[in-house]
Image 1 (cartoon, rainbow, N blue to C red):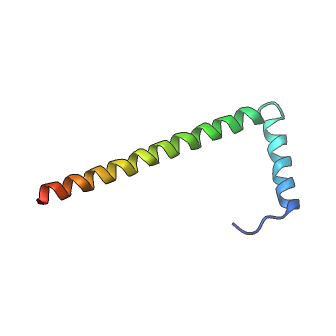
Image 2 (cartoon, one colour; image 1 turned 90 degrees about the vertical axis):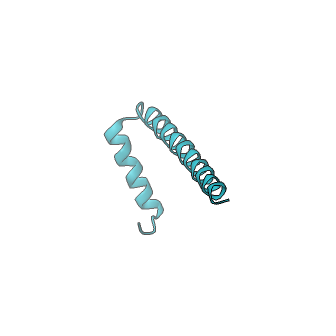
Image 3 (tube, rainbow, N blue to C red; image 1 turned 90 degrees about the horizontal axis):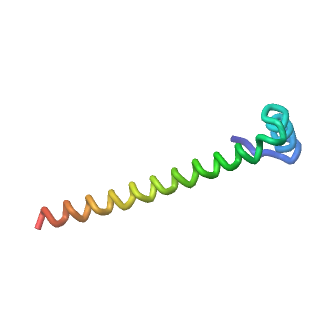
Length: 62
């Protein structure tokens, strides 16, 4: 993705408003925020799982 200037960002926002309407945008942003929160949570749990399995493998070697 290249550098976005102010004009491009305004154009994108205008298109979003036209497609979704002003009332739907807060709901859309809330959904995106919840999705990102769930993704980070799952990613964090996966990292913990990887650490636990690595520790378990080290204990098996002993």
